[in-house]
Image (cartoon, rainbow, N blue to C red; front, side):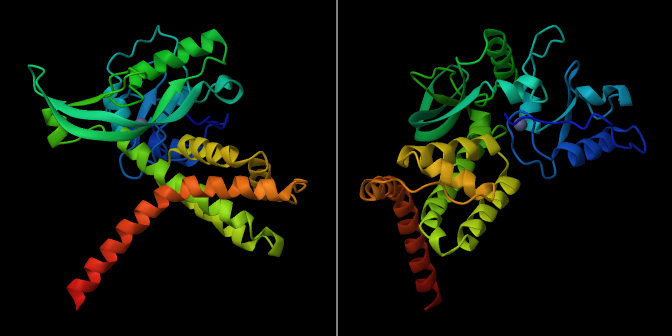
Length: 307
Ligand SMILES: [Zn+2]
C-alpha cells in the first residue's frame, strides 16, 4: 500500500458533489486505488475513513477532506464489514511512511478451482500470485491495524483462502463466468511488467560507462509502466528483490542512477561480480525466454496467415 500525502490545504471545490471530490482528490494524490493500488482510469470512487465506501448520493463537505480516499470498485465491493470503531491502517497515516507493514511475495502453483453452492469443486489448474502479507517487523499496534485493513478489503482478493502455507483460490461459479474481483490477476500482470523492467535495468547498467542515456530511457519506461498500471508496491518489491538477489552493487547502482549520482565504486573482484550478474540474468532470462518463444510462435502464425 503506497503512502499517500494529502495536501493540508484543500484545493478549491466548485460544487460539493461526489464527482467534484473525486476529481479534486485524484488531482491532489494521483488516480490510484488507495488500497490495492490499481490505476483508476474510469472507475473511481470515494472511501471515507469514518463512514466506509461512500454512495454517489452521499453528503460530503469540506470537513470530510482529511477522511477521503480514492478506492476502486473491487476494493469498495469487498469492504462489507466496515465499522467506525475498528482501528484500521490508512495509507495517509504517518505509519504508512515510517512503518510500512505490507510485504509482497511471489507464490507459484496455487490451485485454482470453482465450486458450486454445495462445495463441489472443479479444478481449473494452478496460477502464480504476488501476495500481500503483513510484516512482523513493525510495532504490534501497526500490525493489528494492518491486519484489520487487510481483512476489510480482502487485499488478496475475495477468493483467496487466506492460508499462506497451503494457498488456494476458489471461485464461485458466478465469479468464474463473470469475474468481478480481478485484483490478484491484475497485480500479477503488473509483476510480470516489473520483471521485464528489472531485467532491462540490469542490462542498462552494463552501458553506463558510455553514458546514462540508455539507462535513463529504461527508467522512463519503468515510470510509464507504473503510471499506466499502478501497483507501485509490486514494481518496487519486484525490482528491489531481483536486483538485490544478483548482488550488493545493484540497488546502489539503481538508486545512484535515479538520484543523478555517479555509479558507486566498482567491486574489487570484478570477475566474481560479473559471474553473479550472469547467474541473475540467467534466472530472470528463463521467464523471458518462455515469453519470447510464445511471441515467436504468434509471429509465425501471423506470417502464415499473410502468405
Ligand atoms: Zn482497489
